[in-house]
Structure formats: C-alpha cells, structure tokens
Length: 67
Image 1 (tube, rainbow, N blue to C red):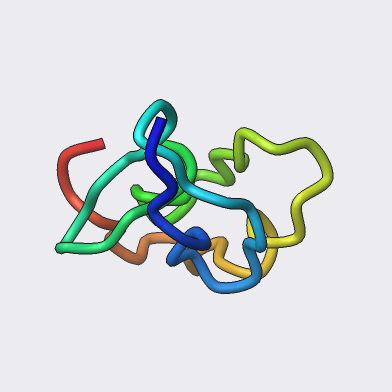
Image 2 (image 1 turned 135 degrees about the vertical axis):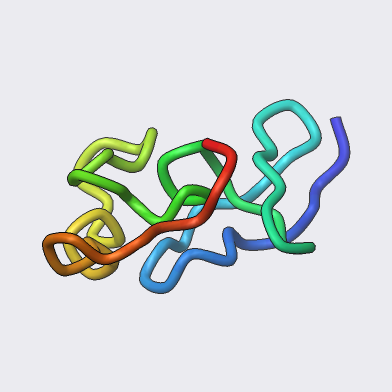
C-alpha cells in the first residue's frame, strides 16, 4: 500500500493510499464521492468529514464526469 498524500478535495484531510485512491483530472482523492465533486450530496467515505458540505455543488451545476 503506497501513500499518495492528502485527498485533493477541499476540506478533506484524509490520506490517499493505493488501496483507496480515486483518480480524477490528474489528482488523487480518498473516495469516489470526493473525486466526483460530491454530486447530489454524495458523501465522503469518511464519516463526519466536512468536505461533503464544503464542496456540495449548487443545484443544477455540473460535477466531474466519470463517477
């Protein structure tokens, strides 16, 4: 298991490993929720992580593709 640094999602402090990495736009995220930009409030895989609310897109706004 290789460490890939901290999740690229704003407000997320969780470490990304080769076991849990979700890659999007050349960045490493800790879960698919973070990688996708939290569409429709899709939560971070880490319970109570503030990034879910910090990065919730306004209604109707496009999120990252592919997740």
